[in-house]
Image 1 (cartoon, rainbow, N blue to C red):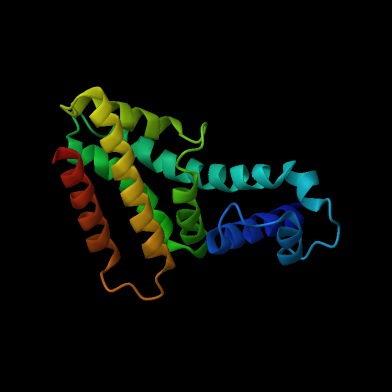
Image 2 (cartoon, helix red, strand yellow):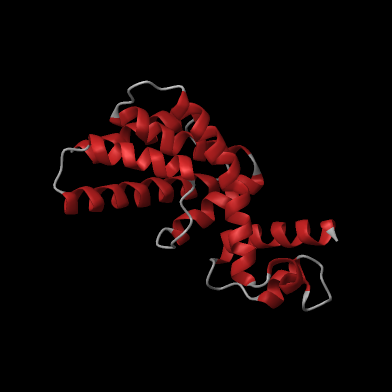
Length: 183
């Protein structure tokens, strides 16, 4: 039973990352997971969207725990510190095949409600407080920076042999995102 659930999660990560969250069918998911029972996915996750949510939540728990630990260690974080809090824990997902698949899924879900974990929410509130912009522009800029950064992480996740070492990539990503926010 547990093995079936894990195979469905792995199949979902692979297919959603490769083909897109809106193109993958339940039949494909069951097939890649080696499930002959057409209702296996529904039994374990309720729906295709339930599987997608389980994939996101599994990775978010790890990422957000790292982010919360880092946030608790900061006294008076700067905009740069907060951008690093948003992006560096996500970038750690680049270190595993499952994490790379997750990062290729994330930009596809940016407009979904209910997918903001607690430490990310706290970090975004602090960023919002520190940006000296009109409310409408602040919101637009934060969304644009997240979309750009998540897209760059997804692109990096799809690269076979990245030209830039991991730590240098993360430092550069944080610097670019900080620059966009403060422009």
